[in-house]
Image 1 (spheres, rainbow, N blue to C red):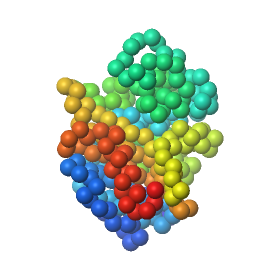
Image 2: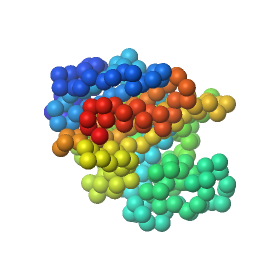
Image 3: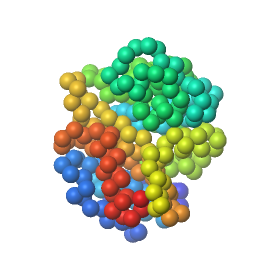
Image 4: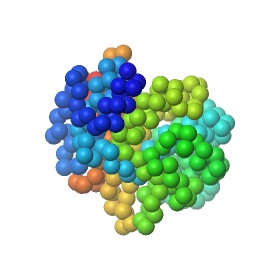
Length: 261
């Protein structure tokens, strides 16, 4: 079954028997990429095969693996233990301007906290893990604390929605170099929504142009519903204000329309 899922993703199968149809009106005016895999049946939904293999900056979705590397190296303890010490620099997002636990930093997507973590990991250890994971184009050369962020004139880390889903499958299968204990810790901080029908785990990411306009939104993660796990990756471009928040809303609306959340 694991091999079947990977083959389906690799060859770009748009849908497979057992995959639920998606109401595309939920995408609004965004150019939407959404890949969903039912980990029990292997059913794959890919609403835009032409774009799901397109590599983009991961933005803050890379915090999933930055967190795992930090946990594996012992640089982060528990989800609620003291972790990030604010450097006193006032930033536009007020929630970043204080000391944060991992859970808090992950929830508010505190870029300075995860930049500090990346510097502590260092280029050599980071590159080793990136290569072992097989993360996108594996390029961290644009800077140890910025490679996952889009920057004008710089080419850094790039990854496609298909690759995001493949990695999440491997992570949940125990095929990446992280202990089960640390994957469990990651799940704790990734939980973003819970209903009687399911639990949604995920991480948003947003990219802006040089003049500050939103131009890319991501939401990646997994869903537990009815005893079945689904992994997913969504990115959006075009339209009005494509952002991580908007991508998350699309994913949540899709799962609700399928009675999974």
